Image (cartoon, rainbow, N blue to C red; front, side, top):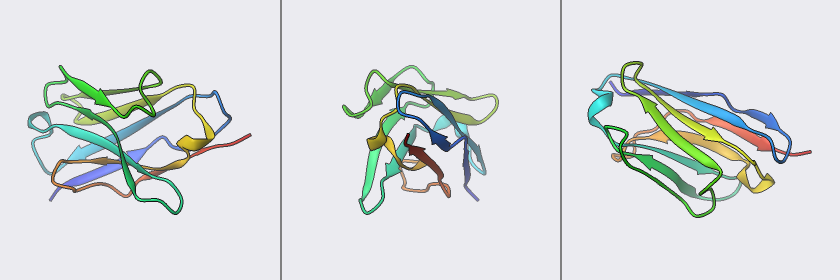
Length: 113
């Protein structure tokens, strides 16, 4: 059974940083591309970033490019999202997700002064 457990969210001031983690189990993590997606209040899911299975290629939504960094540790079966220079519009529930659509329960990120 695929399990994805996100952590690391919280309340941060504009301009601050957070690092999200996603612990994966129930599948061969190192063989799968992984994604971060987010859902802001009252809005649909928004793709944020993707990292290929080996970690050698990444891609980002224009809204986060230059501020967020996705990475992975295939030994620890963990996905990360380093978020810097956070803005109020980054407020959302953040999910790690497989291309199949499976995702975890999410972690809340709130950017507010």
